[in-house]
Length: 362
Image: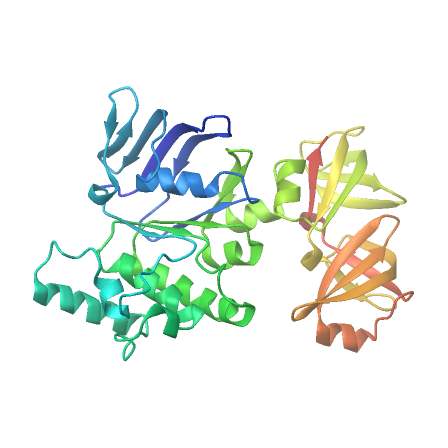
């Protein structure tokens, strides 16, 4: 029996925005679907509607063979009967309760022995042993995040909803917990919907990506596919495509096109575009390879003379701003930057493979 969400609904707010969701689906028991988009795009409202914390005015929400909401029949299943685990952005731990009591909150429907076994089992699984007597104020950010997740999991949910689960953590803790959370979500084997506006978090945790803007889903697909091949200019901006440059197709044939962008020509894969088409050229910074001198023979079809216009550290990597006849961004490791001895004003070659250039018709 399918245990996936299928939802299409409208949530209206008086004198405010309208959230309209069309055909939202999860894709398997161990899959994580990411709701991605800028603040105010409606991500949290969608999660709250699925949880039963918000009441849509139109549409339907189904989980497997169960109907949780149906506007036409005035059917609305309350949150406590949906069997979901919900972790809000602020975790919402009770400050006066211990870790053990926070985790066991809401388990009054099971016997005392089973309740204690569930608490101990979940605490051991999430690395919270020996913390059962502490209050939330005595915990680190990562520990509070795990307590909130443990509280959701002790109820043995059929669906897990996570609202910005790592946003309250500092950078190093967030980096460490991403891999840990990915492992946990796969072990759970239940469908998960996760809200975030962080690209790195979406890439690390998600299987499917739903891009939201203005209260609507504007693109969906596999996480890497959406980030590499945005459907339109709006999505390119939301997924932070580093290089987006207007261009024009001047040749087309055999599945390849030649595009003039700024003062440069590029070869890209695009079997459907014809000569004369106006496009946006999209290139992810991590797909740009930098070399000094004449590059050895390789598969990239585009070898662009470039001048370094600026360098900036971004965590463990360096962003290199280039002029290749149009502005182009590259991301390389700090070690690679040191080995190339890059400085502003240097001449380099920027290599980009044809399949890694995405063209959006305009």
